[in-house]
Length: 289
Image 1 (cartoon, rainbow, N blue to C red):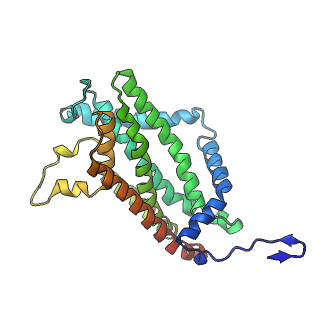
Image 2 (cartoon, helix red, strand yellow):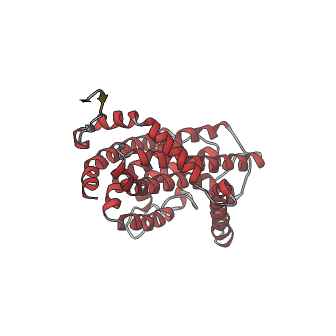
Image 3 (cartoon, rainbow, N blue to C red):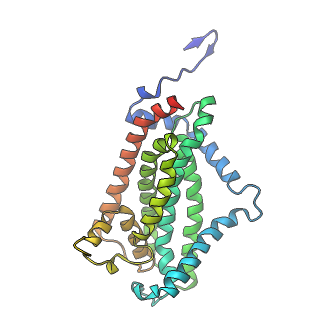
């Protein structure tokens, strides 16, 4: 609309925007997302002596602890899958799946928390509600990229690398899409009830041990006490993603067509459902804040 000699932009209620309209609005705020991403990267390790070194220290510390506990103390080396170069390192075996878990964990938890953190700012400045979520997720994926580079270097050091590593260029985005969908569903609920975020952390800890990361799906019994354990394991899309990552890096084999179909379908379906549910709930949350 025109006010005097100046053009004034009027923001219509978010409810008037459809499924596609939300994407178009987010695209219009591309520069805002870029600026927020840059800012999050700049302040991520602000006032820290080691700075970005923490992006390496944290995952490597987890890897060292898990390797010691599950690989050495609990003799996890017995469950290592064959490696074409004869590599029998439990650390490499574990890290090959752990990097995908880090992606899922980072993207989903960031998406859940970023929206709640942005509500005060949104009172003073209009922007699409998904903008801070996308910015936070992208900034976090930079750290995940560092971890993947470390994984590649770890295999290069022992001379066990093949072209199958390129498959991670597909598995990582599919994992991020699936995790973003999960985060979008829970983000508005967490903004209203902060218990959701705390409960999700508990669920993540449980999900870690029910996902083939420190073991392979083959060691899980078909049934236990009449419960189809392996079938239940396959219902978890992250299980397919961690297994695919290990197959590409440690076993140096391409996952079969079924694995790619499951991962792709889960990623697209999760993102679409998350996008829809988020925008169905977000306006009520914003108005009631």
